[in-house]
Every structure is written in C-alpha cells, then in structure tokens.
Amino acid sequence: MSAKHTNQTEPRPPQRNVGFVSLGCPKATVDSEHILTQLRAEGYAISPSYDEADLVVINTCGFIEDAIEESLEAIDEALHQNGKVIVTGCLGAKGDIVKQNFPNVLAVTGPHATRDVMAAIHEHLPPRHDPFIDLVPPQGIRLTPRHYAYLKISEGCNHRCSFCIIPELRGDLVSRPVDQVLGEAERLVEAGVNELLVISQDTSAYGVDLKYKTAFWNGRPVKTRMTELCTALASLGVWVRLHYVYPYPHVDEIIPLMADGMILPYLDIPFQHASARMLRAMKRPAASENTLQRINAWRDICPELTLRSTFIVGFPGETEADFEELLDFLDQAQLDRVGCFPYSAVDGAKANELPNPVDEDTKQERLQRFMEKQAVISAERLKRKIGTTQKVLVDANGDSGAIARSSADAPEIDGLVYIEQPNRLQPGDFVNVHIDATDEHDMWGRIIARS
Ligand code: SF4
Image (cartoon, rainbow, N blue to C red; front, side, top):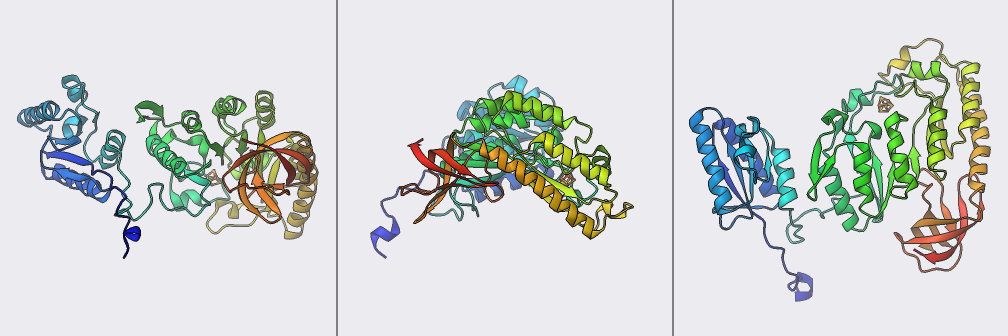
C-alpha cells in the first residue's frame, strides 16, 4: 500500500488518560467496572499514575466513618497531585459532604451513575475522534443528507391518546439529558449540518420526567427544558426546526425566539381535531386549551410563523356537526401546511372500543371536503410570499436548476423552492431567493444574493 493510502502524514490525536481510584464494596467495584468499560469503549486510556492522567475519577465509599475518611483522603490526594477530580459512589450520595470539603472537585455523583460520570468526563475531557480506530464518525452514522439531521430529544410519551399505542410500545417519556443532546447537536454542526430537526413524541414535554434538571454544557448551566434547549441550540448558528409540539401555555416562550430569528419560525403541531368533544374522545394533550386564541397571539408576536398540522377525520363518534366545526377551525386558523388522514383502527388502541364508528364512504367524503378547503387556504397563504425574499437551504442541484427549502418547509413533508436558473449552488448552501410564483405546496424563485 502506498504512503498516500496509509495516511502516514496525518497525526493521530493524543490519547485521553483517565486515572481511576476504586474504593468500597463489591457493588462499588461493579460500578467501577462499568465506568472503566465505557471509558475503554470510547477510546480513553486508563492511567496508572496521577501525573500521567488528564483527570481522575474516584469511586468512593460512604458506609462507615473509616470508609468516609479513606475516601476523603483519596480525594484530597488526587486534588493535590492532579487537580482535576470527579467523585462518584456512595459518599457522593451523602448530601454535600464532598463539595463542602473540596469545592474544587469537577463533579459529584452518587452510586450506579455511569451515565452521569461519563457526561462529566465528556464535559471536562471530551473524547477525541480517532479516524484510525473509531468505527463511526464523531457525529454518528446518519441516513439523512449531510446538511440536515434529526435530533431526537426524548423517547416515549406520557399521554394516552386513544388512537395511539406508542406509549405501550415505547413507554413513558424519557428525556435525553440536555448536555447530551447539545453535545450531539454540536458534533452534527461540526460535521456540516446546517439544519437541525428537533423530534420526539412530545417536544413540549421535554425534561418534565427529569424535573427540568440543570446540566452543564460548555461550562454553562442549561435546564433540561424546551425553551432553554432552543436557546442553546440557537447559539450553534444553524437552522433549528421544531416538530411535534403541543399548544401548551409554556410554548408561548419560544415564539419570541422565532420572532428574533434565533430558531425557525415554524411549528409542527399535530392538532388532530378541533371539536372539543372529539379531542376529549381522542384524549389529546392540551385538549382544553383555546387553540385559536393561542395561534392568534403567536402570530401577533411572530407574523411569519409557519404552522403545520395533521388531522384525523372519521374518528369513532364524529358527527357531521363535529366535522363542520373542524372545517370552521381551518377557516379561522389559516394553517400553512396540513396533512389529513381518515381514521383507521390500530391493533391494541383504546379507540377501537368506542361506539359509533364512521363508515368508510363518509370518511372518504370528509377527507375530500377537508383537503379541498385546506388546498385553497394553503395556496392563498403561499401566494402572499410572491414578491418577498426568502432565505433558502439548497437540497439538490442539477441540469434543470436547484431545489431548496425555505423556513416554512421541513424536508420530506412540506413544499420546495425551485430555482430554475443556472447556478453553482451546492447542497447545504444558503441563498436568498426572490419569489416569483407559488402553488398550493411549492414556490419558484430567482437568486438575488448568496447568504
Ligand atoms: S401524544 Fe398521543 S399520539 Fe402522540 S405519541 Fe403520545 S399518546 Fe401517541
């Protein structure tokens, strides 16, 4: 193999060395093994001496006085000889004893806390990506194009919508710690991502299971909560788009961020219906909120806000009056992007037991009336953009011109912006476009300036 192919000139990144002191009982030893295994799996070396270590982890014991004393002595020694110390184990669970004695330790956790210890290590000694040994790139393996990526912030759901079995399949909401989410977002941006698509089952509930716990990201405290997450993501300087948000009052907090251009003025809110009776039968989150009032208030603050939603027609028990209430809602809400599905039973869903199913013909007829009405609304709303300048993100380029998306267009589900003129744009480029024409879904425009 030639030197060129072996990359002999590319320097290998320096290894990260972690010193480890394991005290206490066999349960503590197992905790130590888990942490050491994770450290090795992530490419850290275990250092035999304080001098060679970049930081030291001490797994403490807090069972009896002697053990506490031994643990405190070990922390003291590591602080003197190395200076960067993370404390875990039973002594860490005993109130503030460690912090009171040693305010300089970097982090303190209780026992069985491999994830928290690793998060602290990542913060103070970030892992180095080594192209020679890592099987995956630092941003992970992605199935999306290089310039946009999905950022999953939680798994599962605390709601129990009667047509849905996701909570049975995936359990209650489990939010990812905010420092992990932000670390992943940062790596994605470093890898060339220009648009982050925040996804979950319920983005507005983010952090509720963690009691909005504060974590540290780049030395800054950040709460595990939607508003704080959005503010931190905005600092990465790329497009941030929110999916699966419910119209709870606290969502009001993120609208000013949109108005200020920090995150995209775009909300994907699956309303599913507008009749209060149907929303109760569906057991929808935020069913009692005055959605129209909330939408109007949001648009007062951020007039360029794009609202996308999905609806179900023909849910069991839906009457003609319920359906007309839904059509009235469409007239008043003037949503930008809308999907609609005829209700179909999902195995195991509670809604299957509801009385008065709607027959298939009626479902199809309502679907058609719904789509006809919304097509007019969507076309009218898009038409207002003719003559405006839109910043767009290029998805593809070819002989017939470039295909891009504006802030109003999420990939795969919304419209496109066609730029039918010769250009040298690359996927992932931002460019300003003058909009010349629109239809129900898409826009056509001319480049006016690279941005
Ligand atoms: S909010 Fe409702 S529809 Fe969405 S995942 Fe949770 S239970 Fe399912």
